Amino acid sequence: MELKRIILKLSGEALSGGGFGLDETVVDGVVRQIAELNRMGIDVGVVVGGGNFWRGRQGRDMDRTVADHMGMLATVMNAIALRDALERKGVYTRVMTSIDIMRIAEPYIYKKAERHFEKKRVVIFGAGTGNPYFTTDTAAALKACELRADALLLAKNIDGVYDSDPKINKDAKKFDKISYLDVINRGLTVMDKTALTMCMDNKIPIIAFALAGEDSIIKAVKNKSGGTIIS
Image (cartoon, rainbow, N blue to C red):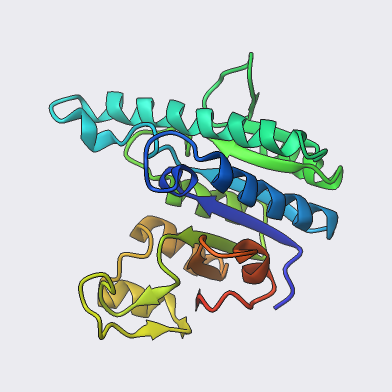
């Protein structure tokens, strides 16, 4: 499977190294690999989460819509941090958001995103879908469909998809390949069902892999990550 265009889904927690805010070492490792993929001629779009700054469930009695709007702003913080890190490596980068923040980012228009790819720019997508009640997983699937990506890369804290939680069950079995329907029928929490169904309907393979490890993103693109392919 040769990948010429990918959407990379990064969680905010991954960028924090498991803590709060941004871990500069982790960010540097991520942008170094994105820069290398860009030099290889691969179109790279990045959808980033915001859990390292805010998660909606922190709001407790807060209105869900308000909490989700705060989460969208957190993703924009991560997006502009990634842009800055990439540009310091000499990579032309654009941030596009699903809510209007014209002073610091462009509004997302899929034709304009296509033009950025034609100009060999990395495009980072912030603010999810721009709607409450939708996850950044769904935003990543939506971008992968709209922009006709060859695959959606799902960078996780574990090295693929298991039949049970490997942190709890030491005998958990990892899948090298699994179908979309098997993931849904088994109730595996890889990503939310809306995102998974969208990828299934549009035949976009999902590569789930562990972000930790040397050149993990590049290996995933080359199908050498040791992760799981959902197709």
